[in-house]
Image 1 (tube, rainbow, N blue to C red):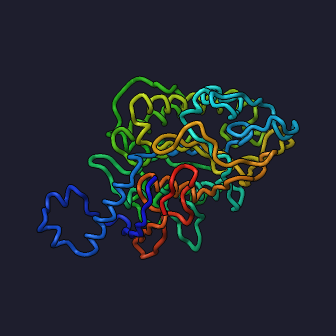
Image 2 (image 1 turned 90 degrees about the vertical axis):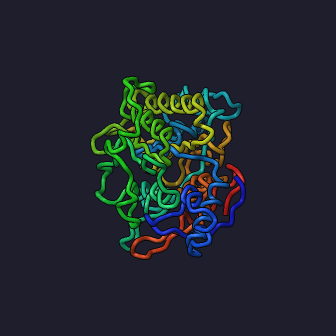
Image 3 (image 1 turned 90 degrees about the horizontal axis):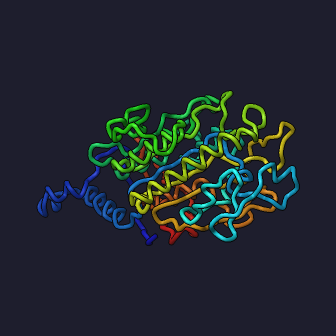
Length: 390
C-alpha cells in the first residue's frame, strides 16, 4: 500500500465534489470553487490514487468464535486447553486449522490469518461489537459510527446504489440492549446502513442459492451481489440473535461443541469457501476485501459445561482479497491461546487497515452534525499486510 500523508477532514453527510462534477464545470468552474471545495477535490484525488479496493465484505461472526476450534488450534496443549477438535494440515505448509474447517484448509492460499487480535474492554458482546465495527466504545453519550458509515461519509455512494448495507439485517438481541456499532451513530441517520430488504433493487434476481440454503449462505451471496452492483461496504451478520439461539457463543449450554462441529463450523466453512471461490472466479476478489471476525475469542480452558466463555485476550480473524496476500499468518498467541505474543492487533488497527485499502489514511477526521470531530482510527494499519498509510 503506498504512502499517503493526507489529513483531510470531511463533514458527515455533507456535499462532496466528484470528478464527474469537475469535468462538467471545466477549468473556469474549478477556479470558481472555494478553497474548501478545492481541498476536498485534492483529498478525493489522493484517496482514489491510493485505493486498493472498491468494496469490502465485513463478516461479523456473532457470539465470538473460539480461536482454538477455528483458526488457531493448539494440538500440543493439555486436553482441557486444546479441546475436542483435532488440528489438520492445510495446503500451506506450516499452517494448521481446526478439523471443523476442511474446505478453508484447502484454500489458505486465498487468505491471511490474524492470530493476535485482542481488546481490553469488558468481556461482553456489545463492547466487543462496538470495538470491532467502530474501533472504540461509546463514551459520554457519543455513539461512534460503524466503519461502513465513515466510508460512506468520505467516499459517498456510487450512482444508483447505497454506500453501506447490512445483510440480512441489523443485529438483534445480543444480551444487553445497547449500541452494537452497526449504524452511523453521531454521524446521523442519513449515513445509516441500508438493510432489511432496502437493498433489494441492487440484487440480481436469481432463484439459485450457489453458496447453500442457510441464512448465512444467502446473506453472503447477497453481499457478493451488492459488491458487484457497486456498494462500497457490506456487513454480513452470521447470526442476528444470541438469546437461546445456536451461534458462535459456545458456553456449552445453548450452543455446545457438538453444535460447532455439526452446524456452525460447517456453515461458515462452506459459505466462506464458496464466497472466496466466487469472488476469485468473477475477478472481484482483486478489488474486494473480505474480513471475517468475531467480537472476541473464547477462554483457553474448557468450562464445566464443556464449552468456553468470553475471552477478549486474544482471537483470530480471516482477511482476503484486495492487497492481502494469501498463505500468511500475522501474529501469534501463546502456547495455550491466552494472549498475543507477536504482533498484537487491536480492532482499531484492523479498521485502520480496511480504511487504508480504500485509500483513506487512519488520521482522516470527520465532523458530526453537532461539530464533534473524530478520526477514522487511532492506530496505524497492520504493517505486515503491506506498506501502511499514515
